Length: 339
Ligand SMILES: *[C@@H]1O[C@H](CO)[C@@H](O)[C@H](O)[C@H]1NC(C)=O
Ligand SMILES: *[C@@H]1O[C@H](CO)[C@@H](O)[C@H](O)[C@H]1NC(C)=O
Ligand SMILES: *[C@@H]1O[C@H](CO)[C@@H](O)[C@H](O)[C@H]1NC(C)=O
Ligand SMILES: *[C@@H]1O[C@H](CO)[C@@H](O)[C@H](O)[C@H]1NC(C)=O
Image 1 (tube, rainbow, N blue to C red):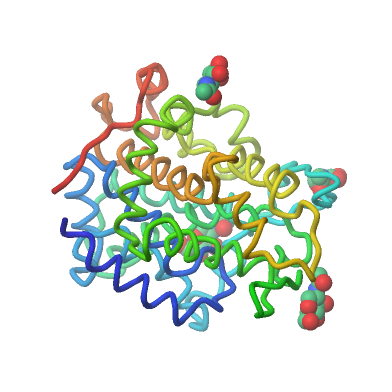
Image 2 (spheres, protein in one colour):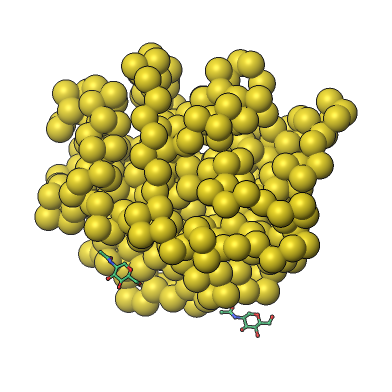
């Protein structure tokens, strides 16, 4: 399969950059992009390829890590606080409470913002190089934020999202955040898949279609009224009924109580029992499942933007969009495998 070489390249890269502290590391972001790519319709994949610079070969997985590489640039200074959402008042593992307060500067808003831009550019095709580049940025940020919002520590502000929570990993000292960014995934691939990220990916897609299928068919379901709330994008993003960053953040925030921060102890070796718990069968392969969720949701939204199942009316931003036609599909994940 044509995707595998870049995945392996990214996996070996991530061995070098495991200390990255922002969102999923390169490996996690690459994997979410890989999963999403497999669920794009051919038409969506075609348009994605058109939007991205040739360098990316049309692959979301190659574009996904980009926002972590431009953090030092003045042009993108605005973006770094959009990778996560803080949660005033929560204190995992004792209490996990996510009440979204629109602040204008978090991953929830970032996802609304980027989706809104992609929709606008779908309506009015960009003609200048500047606009085309802004559209490419929006897509790259969108893909990246979709990964970040599925890393549970990006949905709790406690100890700077676990960056300040010291933890032991074998003989090394690291942080809870880094463990969730990459170390759990890397070890999972190593232990269960003989260090083969391609096998991990294939297994994840297989699980999505089989073992996780009952819940996976709900991954792309949400109630817009409950999820869009008071944000400046709610009019345009209402069109995309599967865009539910508030609900996802709430879901991830709950995991901070039930798994991530549970029995936190800086002296405990997180590569032992804790690793087994969050990656194993007992908890439905949680770490792997979060990546799959992110990818499936990402693809569903991109398909709704670029290849909606119902033809759009003249001006989708003004006319009533027939969202019931999407929500009513019982298993509305479209499994399109690209060879
Ligand atoms: C949300 O913001 C409002 C007004 O700024 C404030 O009264 C409220 O306490 C905030 N809620 C949370 C959960 O932070
Ligand atoms: C939306 O994103 C753009 C970058 O594409 C940024 O300049 C702008 O500040 C963002 N708006 C909000 C409200 O976050
Ligand atoms: C996190 O650690 C940094 C550096 O040690 C420190 O300056 C900061 O106050 C800490 N923040 C929190 C929220 O604990
Ligand atoms: C899927 O969502 C429906 C409606 O909210 C719910 O009744 C059902 O239990 C969910 N199924 C699973 C497997 O989560």
